[in-house]
Length: 314
Image (cartoon, rainbow, N blue to C red; front, side, top):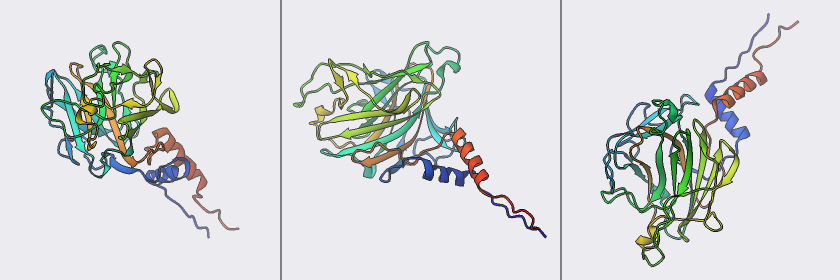
């Protein structure tokens, strides 16, 4: 008489084993938002503390309604991500309080997130008007009718006309330490390759609120390994100044995360996910979302390693 012993392993279990065995995971990361508790297809406004009312204002006018909802990850089905797109005039905003992740004056903190620029040439075949214009930032206070400033650490990602790629830029402080107006450098492109569409990128903001500067690191696409971002100002600048924060006296607590969508781009989109914080500098990966091909290989490998039966006894 023979007896067959079968072991069943779920994809979820395979993912857990894969993460535990092969990924460098920072032990002190605090999850802030993974969108896992938000239903796919639902609007973000009012969920998990997010404000996404669709009527933020700025000097360029009042924003029209935007799309701010949770969708299925295009590369890893079953993982929820935020889709933020905008088609209107003026500026659109979404924000949320940082809670226990507040960054007070004189401290250092790291924020990690994933982002992805979808292929915008596919929206209507006119990629000169469909490209995204998004800003990620940490800031003191929620958005008000006075506009989007000031910002602490920040990054603008903007599509390139007729190119289906995107560039990254920053805008250092317009004020000196006394609060007097200094010259506005405008948005400065970072010295980095253009971003590919349909590619997930890892992004780290390391915030130093003692010096009111931040460092940016990225990984993904053409950035095969983690790379520090910089710009040229007569020399390589890696410690990037906050924008406008000196106008508050330089002591404001960064207590909100804020995303801004620019105007007149006919629905250019951005996907965002997996927002984590840590006190101090942390350039490791939080518990990551594996790529689907990696998951399949892990499942197959695990199935291959686990016996599915026992030969009949002789």
